[in-house]
Each structure stands twice: as structure tokens, then as C-alpha cells.
Length: 225
Image (cartoon, rainbow, N blue to C red; front, side, top):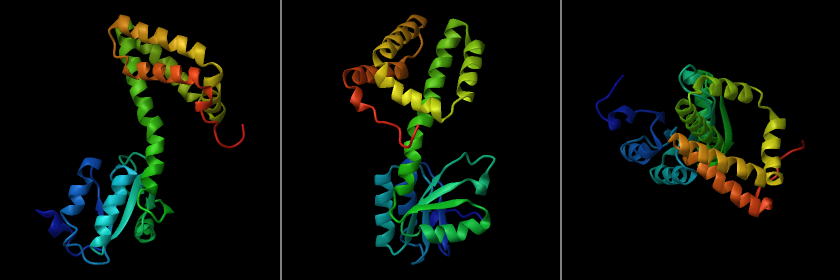
């Protein structure tokens, strides 16, 4: 049943799923918090920062509404309600109890809002950063007339990624920072010659320069090799 306004949509709800962007999360909650039934659960599924989730939780608590910070951990298209999720906050267990029987894999990771968001955003550092690196490489490859060949090489390399490779990427950087810095400086020069965007490569170069000066700034991967 569709409604013309948010207040009507939540008036008799036991559980509200707020599926918004991070920038719209606060406005979404503020639009309904005054009319939510006391004891209802408000689940924020936005990819907002932990601090934002904590503030949303405080707003909900002041109105007697249970709050849960939900982080969706896989693409929703193709998964729908079966998208794996992490849940944290005062109402996380209640959220899980409602959604698991409906087919949603929910892992409760804490009782404080923001604990689910933290876990997702730490992964986003890599996943969203990797996407931008791939785009930058492909734009440069197109300018060099090597798009298909570069793509095939990237697919082959990324298809072989395992824990051993990830450890080498991290642990090998401080050992070989000077050489890798030289390589990235050459990469930036290439992209400039091609007239391609080098924003991500420039950032990598700057970070390698810092690591070359202070190798101890690179953390050791957890666990055992």
C-alpha cells in the first residue's frame, strides 16, 4: 500500500525500513519520528557514517522508538530481501527476529548504533577505491589504444587474488616503497602524457612517498601468514 506522505506510511508500523541515501537519512527519520508508535523499531539502512548513525539513534530514543543501524553487505539487485546484512543498536535483536524468518540473513554485531556502519565502511575503503582505480586505468588505457588488452590483464590479475597476495601487497610495500614510488611516479607521468585523469594514482604516489619516509606506518595484516 502506497501513501502520499511518510507519516501515513508508518502510522501503525511495528518495523520501519528506511532505505535512503546517507544524505537523506536524518530527514527521513525526522519526517516520521513524532508519529511512530512507541516501541516501534526504526531500521536505518543507509550507508551513513557511524557518527551519523549514533545521532539517528539518539533522536529515535528520545521519542521512545527502537533504533537499529543496518549495513547491507551485498548488492540488493538479484538478492532482494535475501541481501546479507549486519545489524547494531538497541533494537538490533528485534530487527533480526523479524527479518530472519522472512529470509534476510542478519548478523547482530553490537548493541550500539554505528557498529554495523563501521564494519561496512572499512570494507568500502577498498571496494569503492578499487572501482575508482579501475576506472582511472581504463580511461588511460583507452587513450593509449590498449583498453581490451589492459582489461584482460586486470581480470586475470584480480581473479588470482587470495590472502597470500593481499599479505604481500601490504607487507611488501614498506620493504619496496622506494621502487614502488618510482613506478607510480612513472605511472602519473604516463597518464599526464595521455591526457588522462591521474587523481587516484597521484594519491597513491603521495602515500608511497610517506611510507618510504616512515615504513613503520604500514600495519601488519592480522593473523598468521
